[in-house]
Image: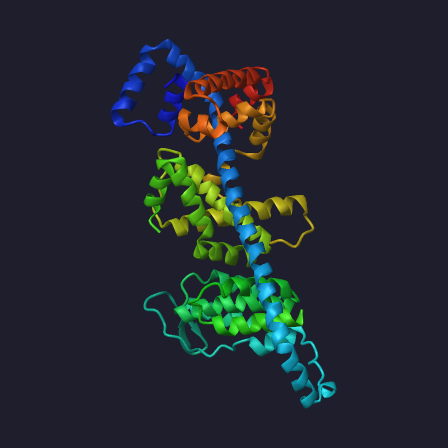
Length: 234
Length: 192
């Protein structure tokens, strides 16, 4: 090991206790080593940056591999879908004639406000409260501070309120210890759909896609249906 | 997620470190936590993907500091890094585009993201840019604690001894480049 190898190992904690002790003794006895340590101090930021480059290169490799894998999947799915479509095409044509295809009209596209209203869950007060936590009051009912914040957020999730949705999200995000696990899932749900009140359907879709990635989310089924509807009407 | 276990694996070898990076990157819960936070705070999906990768890079870098340890779970730690990185990004965007409707945010205080500032990084890259590609490649591998034998295999050199000489030459060259860059030496005194 040359001086720089020893110094790099010493700085990164890779030497054993005995080796570290020997190195420290050597530093005070060997002027060449002392000079090398001084030079290394100037080199150190470069060494850190070069190590970072190596880490980033590896991360990019991982990202690229994941991207390649996800590009291949839709292609395979598309082929499968095309085969399925051909098989059912004949049956579908016959059914369409029977149903009087020309009398069926596609449903009118729903506005963001309508979609929000359809999927919004009004506050019901139902949850299994956690024990402990600070208490607040809402009118004559005693609720936890977290629950009071949750209720206020719901009040602001009203298309008539301004700037309701943004302030509602701020409040929902402040709730670190919600009343229950159900509340936690509800908070995620309501943050996602609140963007519809601001016409930001794309962000709602992104957040719902993140929500449905969690198989334990209580809103999984509802979010899956809603995502389908949002994407079909986009 | 036991943080110390991950830290030990990162430090064990380059192969082990790369396995950790892949595991963390592919971890659905970690990705979901990051996406949830970024998307709920004015970010896009692309922003969230970037932050997810950056938080892991930051963790890996920190593992190489001998005094590094985490007192909480790795999940919480990575979320903290994500949060601070995102707040920094928002702050910079707001500064570059003052009319943007981005929330006001306070300065992040996490020291992790202050390891190498933007200004210092620019000077370092300017100097490193003058190294030839082979030198840069050897030093990148050496800086990641790869043994001479592994570097020889990676770069098709005939022996570890050849790598050792190359590395010695490249470090000497780097020192010359630094000596030829007075602003860097001056900046070092002011500690960028």
